[in-house]
Amino acid sequence: MSAPNPKVKSNKNSLSDKNWQEYYDSKYKHHSERNRARKEDRRARERRRKREFIDPLAARDHDERRDLEEKAGLRDLAIQNARSKNDSVRSRLKYGFLWLGGAVGGDARYYQPRFRYHGLVSDEHELLKLFVQYTPRAGVHRVKRDRQTGAFISERNQHTLRSGHTKAESESGDSKLLALDDEYITANARMRGLIRIDLDADFATTDAVLSACDAAKIPHPNIIVGYVDRDGRMMHPHLLYMLHDPVAFCGKAKSEFKALWHKVSRGLTHALAPVGADSGGLSNPLRTKNPLCPAWTRRIGAQQPYSLSQLARYVDLSVTDEALFSSHQDIPARSACTITDPEKPSMQLFNELRLFARDIAPARIAAGANEDEFYTEIIITALEIAARTGSTEADARKTAASVAKYSWYKARNAKPTLSAEELHSRQATAAQRTAEVKRSKTFNAIMSAYNQLQADGEQPTQKAVAAASGKSERTVRNHWQAMLDAVAENAAGTAVEEPAISSSSVKKKRSSDDFENQHHGNNETKVFAEGKPKPPDFNLITLNRNPKRPTSPSRREMLYQAWRNSKNAA
Image 1 (cartoon, rainbow, N blue to C red):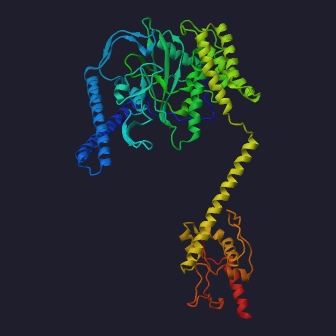
Image 2 (cartoon, rainbow, N blue to C red; image 1 turned 60 degrees about the vertical axis):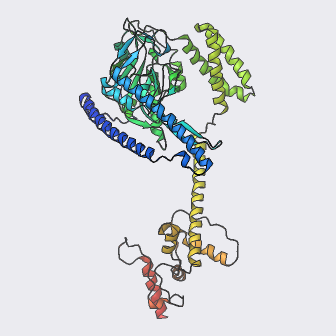
Image 3 (spheres, rainbow, N blue to C red; image 1 turned 45 degrees about the vertical axis):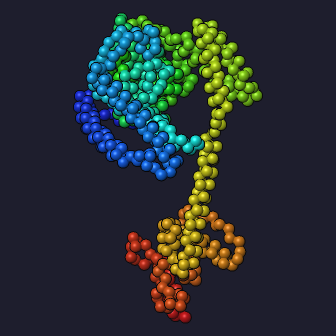
């Protein structure tokens, strides 16, 4: 293999292949038992809920009775669907999977005769069980009220398992076990635990696929899935690289891990481009041939999953679109013992037309051309490429329509590219504006707490203001002088402008009078019953010192003592 990428830290799994399989099998059994117990608890709660169901005829109001009847009808329909699903699941587990014979995946070249497969394909290897884990759950119907019509509707969760018998077919079902028998399946998009590479070529054997990976100096895939004909050729396989830790693409997922996942996918595709890797498959990277479908042929390559950083060590993470799509143009002479199927003319048409449309679209928009003129130009170019590559006119027009629509939309909605200086300037301006808004909210909260304490007849000390405003004493201390100035200006009847308070504490030298006035309102100031502070001669003014600091006299205490001595001497 090639030299590791020094920019990415290696994170290899220390377990051997056998130890990992034993570890995963024990963990799989533990989670299966826990999920089985949870399912039983859920069924018990459902039975209790059914017993507590209110009879629609017992409702007092007509509208309430109608709503309950609608809910009851939807519930009966859901019960019928659940019973039908459970019957199908029991039949599948008892009699196995029956293939009636025909084309696998809707492709006439992939013919399989009639056969029956008993059991589950995932029991063949732990990596296949891991693949089950990296697919989402089956769709669950829930009853909700439509906000516009007010009627009750039954909807399915959008993040559900989608499968189909062809590449274009994608449907969500009620049973995950039955959906995993379909020829094509979509992996979990929110927690991505695999990377799929689509090879548009026919290999002499499955070993030739691994030899192609060795020639490209990349690791072997964990799962190879495709159709093997009577001569033993692996036709258009999908390579699946399983990840030990899935990458989160939902919620507050970190962007650097999502970017690394995309870079590794592009790097693997670029490395296998000489042997037919489909760069267009990156637009739908989770749609794959289902290795759990008994109609496909599957082979296990690497015996345990990879980490994302481990895969990144063997690929180029700086692959551009030009390098990715032009790599098909520089394909070397393919070995007859390894690759027996050349690149399809339609794929070459798509790659050339996509690059051409992407390059000219911004210039045409800047020149004031409309979408129809752009579409006409793409059609003419597509027909020229089709005549050179051998594609049909129908394929050229169909490809041109989709490429022109997508390229025009992307060019019209493209964000302006900023230089490093402009980006830094915008980020600094936004950060300054955000800091000003936060300072303004903090100052207003402290001011409101101070006024509220005064209105309630309480002493507005720094500690009391901090407790009332929910801010720390340090924050209140930083804003204290500016707030007192604002209160004084407000009492004098002048217009009060919100001061610009620095976020950091600014220490200033004060005179002895300012030092005395500073503690008029401090939390340690003693007050007579008449409401006047005691004079300093009584030595009852103590400083608000931090208890975490040493007990030695501070500079302020020494200044205060010198001032006090001078007052006594006078």
